[in-house]
Amino acid sequence: MWISGATLFLCIVSVIFIRNQVRPIEQLAEAMERFGRGEDGGLFRARGAREVRGATLAFFDMRQRIKRYIEQRSQVLAGVSHDLRTPLTRMKLQLALMPPSQEIEDAKRDLSEMEQTLDEYLAFAKGLTEETPERVDLAHLSQEIVADTLRALGGDISVEVSGDTATPGRARALKRCLANLIDNAAAHGDQVRVTVRGEEEAVTVAVEDNGAGIPEELYEEAFRPFSRLDETRSRHQKGVGLGLAIARDVARSHGGDIILSKSELGGLRATLRLPRPA
Image (cartoon, rainbow, N blue to C red; front, side):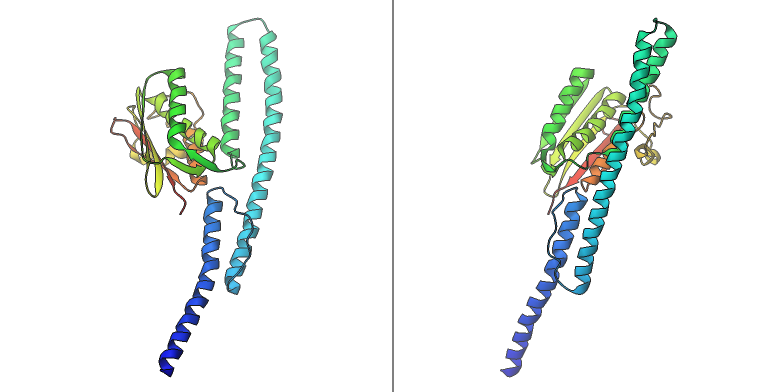
């Protein structure tokens, strides 16, 4: 009886001790996962063993350094944007006051391309990390983007929805991500199919087209900034090669990713996968 009682007592003490040590680790893991999705859960008390408390404090310091870096980068980019847009605006005004000619039209077209390049580069470099996360319905965003694309370009674009497609995220960033995928598909194919599925562990959005597609060995190259893949895609498509780079940057900032594969329509399939929080 003494041995059984002592064993039971030690087991209870061990379970309580282990739970008290594991709970801070679980809390730290949850905070790191939320921060990886762009959410800021705020500070919490560092508890547990000395090593766990040290890891928690190191995470707090790292989070503050990252937030300061993002803030400084945003301020620098805002200054760059202002400094570059001012001379571009003056040049556009000067060209508008000049007598019409073919050279003037060529210069206006070059300025327009410069503005587009500047806008896309700033969007790629800055991102939308300062946006407050909220519950976003990816099916509603996809349908809204498809409606805008049909009004602007026309074509054959369909949307298929199944399951619960709402997930935490930053609405403007996700809308830009989906718009880049859908616009890219519409620019390279006559038929586009968007499939939004809500699964138990994640929400996926597959965008397919019937265009020329991309060779499998160039899938990762397509995500590189300013990569146009002119050998496989049209040389005269608009854009500066930042669409897929921005889309993947947004996806990864939400803890997800974008995977390229061959489409059943004959072209390219871009699949956005955003995991649901535990």
